[in-house]
Length: 341
Image (cartoon, rainbow, N blue to C red; front, side):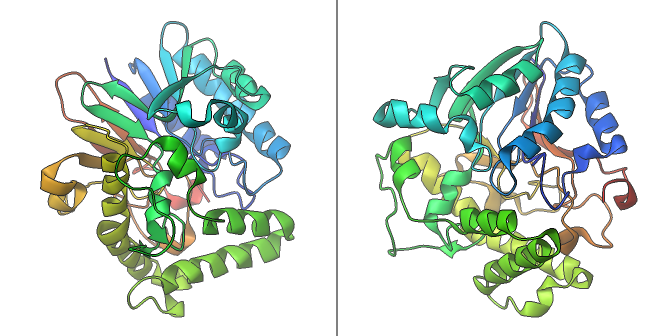
């Protein structure tokens, strides 16, 4: 079975960084669905944190309907919500509580919001899982936001938390990650962006980047200028290798997920790519092997004046096929920035 795994579409983003609202990226994605038997949407599909939920859902509806129609009858869609669209399953999580498993199936009508999204992805066969799903023997996929619990500040970018704060211990279950820690930087940033007028919201997003940069070695304020995008991407890439990837490995180990491969999103950094040091993308003793799906948002502070292939270029995905190792691909590498932003 051929499987295409996408994450971090962030449809309805208030700052309009979601590239699938532009014709050419959307056309390229629909072309990529030809011949695909299964589509996995691995979280942060609809931006339900930083924008009024109804507005984000209005933006997402025509795009998800078109994806569903393009897939057609007989093909499968698997949805695994992340932290930005956790509202799709939040009420259900409260009900199941400690019974939440690493690959719990979720009823497609678990919440009214989830039922709406499910209807848009028709006529394909939809399955919903949270916080992860087994895609094949030895291949587990999750959005990846649980790794935040092992970082300071509690966000997709940070430094290893170490002994500070409440961190789930070995033998943890998913509800421990749901309840651990305090307010996250991601949630605070989304609240501020939602509340402010749009020009100030853009400034607030840059300030959030400053907070992230301050957690990194040699992360000066000047990294926040678009002209420094190459250096900023390099610094964030180093942070991910030394903090986020080990944090994800800790999550997998503490949940007892015995996987050869773990696919995730959340950090918006496609990889590993051919130039990456492959050993960084592995857990202790070489297992599990990690792959990130990248994102479908255009972030000027990371890709200004860049050319693809680039780890933060929009359009990342992972392809999983029978008898072949999963691999990261850039579906929008041939699309110019002017068509996405």
